[in-house]
Length: 249
Image (cartoon, rainbow, N blue to C red; front, side):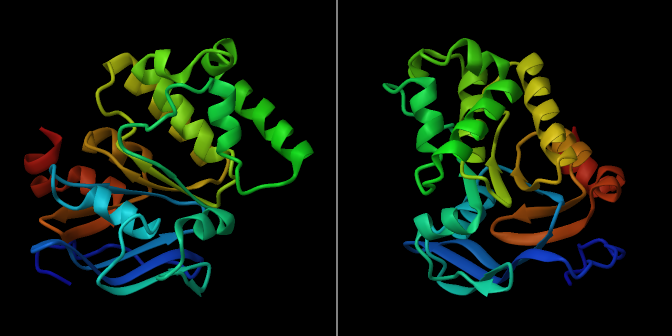
């Protein structure tokens, strides 16, 4: 452990869902991640915090194989998935709600949601899950026939999360869900995250608003220039003076 890490991070229980071991990623000559080690347990919300360019989004992209690690291993449910294709990971239960939402602007809300279930072939269960998402996100129900590109930023974020949930994930990767949203909408999004946590959903959350992220998370990791420099219980990180000065304002 780095001397900058918290000394008492607590014992990590043996119900690991995801483990990253010595993951490194380069973009050309730039090292985006440097020997990242990270663990997520079943039912946890774990957050990655750090400045812009620290490597948070790259970490999620490496997990979902949007970018390929140069070295290291990614173990999911006891299986080495380091060389899997993205669609294989969706089938295994990993869903990625990306930064910038990335909804299909010229498709309806319903079509976007159904595309979230593209790896499934259980039509009755898909319809049941669709109904469940529309109950969870009433605004999407009101706009189900509307083109996704005409939704507000907050509604598009809700759609991106709901679309990811349509694959029935065990692990939800959430990348900057509050980005560019008004404060009132940010609060709504975090209520949704809390509700998902209450259902037992395992979430890896990348979030610029470190204060909100640590309030909703069980544990956290701090990324600086591609390196994990601190980790611990979210409640401890919230009280840590270094975290306060650097990220909590």
